[in-house]
Image (cartoon, rainbow, N blue to C red; front, top):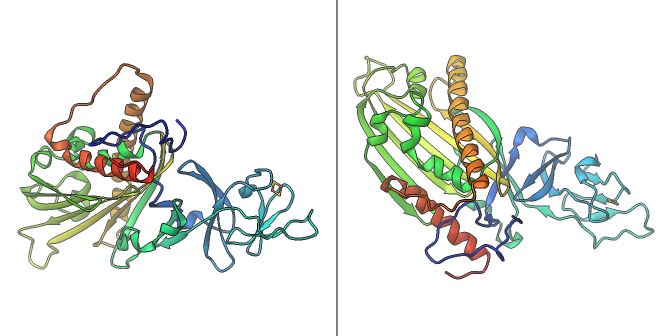
Length: 361
Ligand code: FES
């Protein structure tokens, strides 16, 4: 399906986004981690467009379309000279704003020629990019992930490239009833799946709150807190923060801590998704905690446990994607009451995509 083919996709009033819905363009997405962007130019397809990423000598992250406006040579295959990006085919030169600063074969520099550059903002370990209407880029809309850049927190992290759609991936994270089945013993317990949840919507943000008291923590929280098997209170929030970001906060409280021992432990989980295209996603995750900051055993445990759990999600979503793509019999997926958060998210994406396509519902 062509990228954002709103001319063939039919928006229905009251509809819900699915894997066919045109991608949301007016949104800040993660383009890369800060470590990935350096003086070595890299290329990455984001929202269907090839982007070249590099840093200036001053350290500023730059993103431009990875396609020379002369003969489409991929600019990431060119080179940097100072802050100038030089095409590897005929040597056309571009400054960090994308404007042509020299064309060797021309006696006069064609200053009106340019390659599209994209607004970029770096926050902690994430490089955010805006690929929508340039006039609408507003850095204050980037969701808060302060714990990724706060000395009171530490994080382990990983990344996947997966064949699925970001709507289904967001729904997976808003759907906590799958935890004890897809991730048995790790992040879910049957008691947690049955615990009461509240769902609220604040603008385009969907928030789920859950509370479970006097129940042993699941495996991923048990080891780092040292509370294996002990009844604890567990408070959690899962948040569809934007089409690009899902966050999950967990607070584990030991109601009867030994004298002088820590009673409250926090975990913040960050999931950033950027569609590469319809049907493939760049996915970065971070598992952050505000205790045992220098404990390498906790780092190793949390990294291993998180990577395993998220791989289980990736596998599940890729299997679903395969079925959806290969089975051509029509199906209307059933919905049950616990699916409400995912449906609210699908409605938000549907309405935003329709607005971007100029369709009034
Ligand atoms: Fe880049 Fe010709 S293709 S200068």
